Image 1 (cartoon, rainbow, N blue to C red):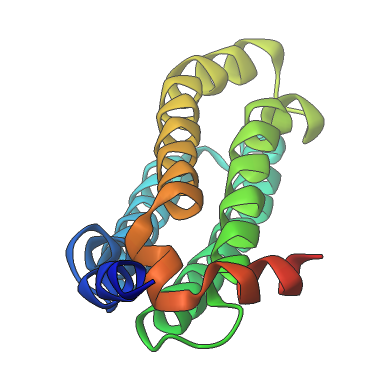
Image 2 (spheres, helix red, strand yellow):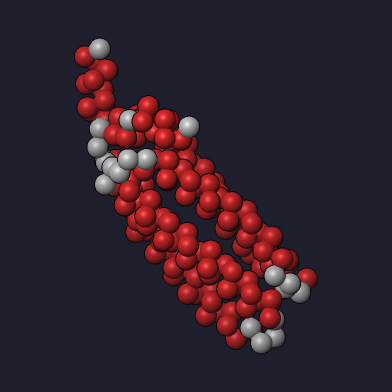
Length: 163
């Protein structure tokens, strides 16, 4: 039993990959999403009059991205501060972000972009969306398999909170 406690102590704390995840969720991912949102909005703004669907696409995408940015920062801080149920909150964030990435593939058609413009937007954004979904899946797998996460947040407490 002493060996198990030593292992838990050795892995306990926000260090290593877990620290990188906290930095990504709190700083890097939100900053990247914000910069991308600004850049894409500035690039597409001149075409809003010609393509009303483009404005709707940017509005809906911008609102969803902003919500995900706030959620990401909240989950990163929760994880970093070792708040109860932080792992469950981060898993929920990953699921929401994954579903938004999947939904955004179909969003151009939903908002009424012309077929040609919709095809161009989907073609350029689909690769990015797939990369984001893989990125989120890898971090999700890390959360459920990491000894550090289990030692720091307590596996049994998180499972009870999810159930």
